[in-house]
Length: 271
Image (cartoon, rainbow, N blue to C red; front, side):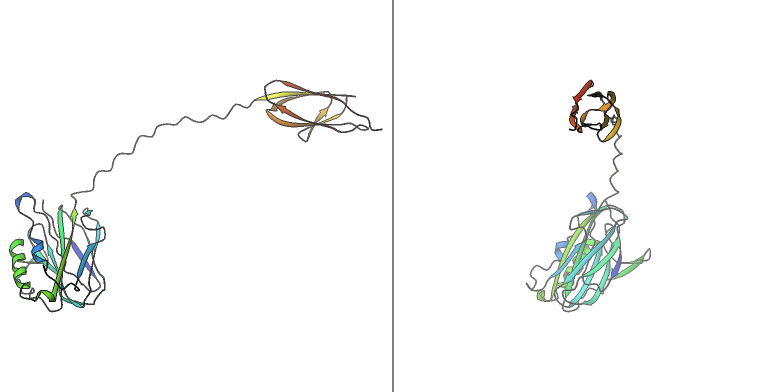
């Protein structure tokens, strides 16, 4: 598959050389990016580049993307963009950057699908890379020549510079053809509507001797003995009888079933 350029908006100073190396599918081999990696750099001179989702991650057309890069020495940096079509362009050339400062390239991913490689060059002296012939197409300037040939030319030019004076690195990401289809929402299964439990009641018949005592059921006066209390909810209850000249009578009652319960007592006279 072929892959087009990635539009970049450069935020801050540009530190890194970024190359977009798309896959050319079965028609051509991928450009030899590793030819541009310094095989024997100074061990204390490093340049790094990475994307916000991590190396090898997948983006889709329209996704925003950020590329981060830095070098641990003040140096000149170059950003090379290699497209799936075989076109190449500089994003940054001969830019002096500060040591250990992270810079950002921000852009939007565009179709078609493929692989993009980002290469960074950092050098303590200018690299002889600016004289590659360029041409304008569709409002953008590209390096003339096929990808493999241009990469070979770049390799030949940077070999002139002492290996200890420059360093390079790369990363890559994938561009998908389109977002995977969103699976349909599962059909909700109707849930049975919970039914409130059926309230059960019992009845309580309250009597006393002598009769005529005031009856309080759970603290609420219900009449005088004898009295039949209906629709009494199942559970614990309290019956209290009050009659002038007699001691107050109180009893706990447990209504457990739908039946009639009896509370009967002889009240004690106050001497």
